[in-house]
Length: 301
Image 1 (cartoon, rainbow, N blue to C red):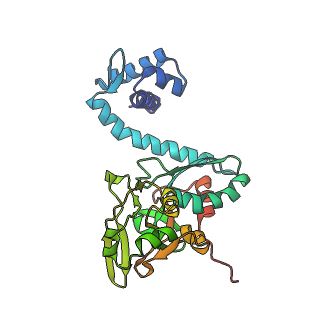
Image 2: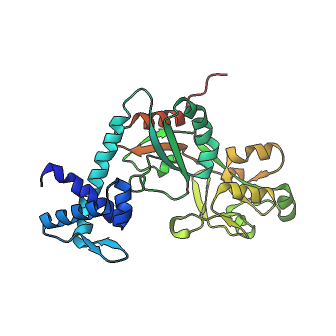
Image 3: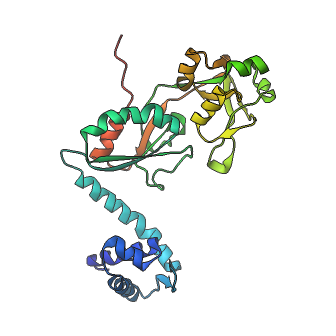
């Protein structure tokens, strides 16, 4: 196929992905009739029907699906590299998409980015708070932020935080009414505030550790959330025990609004890391964001 026909492939991909000639034409800035003519010409040259057209929808045929799967990712990579080349100038530009938990976003990402973004008015950041372990390449994120042991080995990872200490906490009123658990099995008799993970919809099992002993305790209680800030608020209101990052609950422990229990069973997790695909050449915008998130050594006090 002649090189100039790459525009025909781009036109086909636009229609197949949008499922509509009208939407695809508006997206790439051509008339609907011109787009239809281009796709029909491509089908004629290939001798294959690529799209099934009805009065209400457009869908790729089996051949169309195969063509999408083959050329789509490659053309996306070319487009990404061209964008990266366009950013090789004095000031970084473009949008950096990040997936992180609400805790990581509020405690670390936003405080650090908030001080940097005013320096780069052409740089935009989109942060999606989610506990799902996303495939950042497939989901088109530029950066993921997760604990170090959750980062795939083929990623480039940069440490964002020191190792994270966990805590089991409750309100003083709950402890006065129900007592404090001492052993992991005691948790089964308590009302525990659960975290539901988006993957398979399962509840998070508390990962406890004492010396060489490691346990996963599947707790139950009256309330379940999908974010740690709601869990924290429920614990403050006396709804039960919560398993949360120590730095998140420390101000409430210091103020006496929460008490810590079973401290000898609370583990330390690898710190949060920002990571991106190793095969990707970092753009100026990506580099600026990564460096903003990087953990800096503490100056001697």
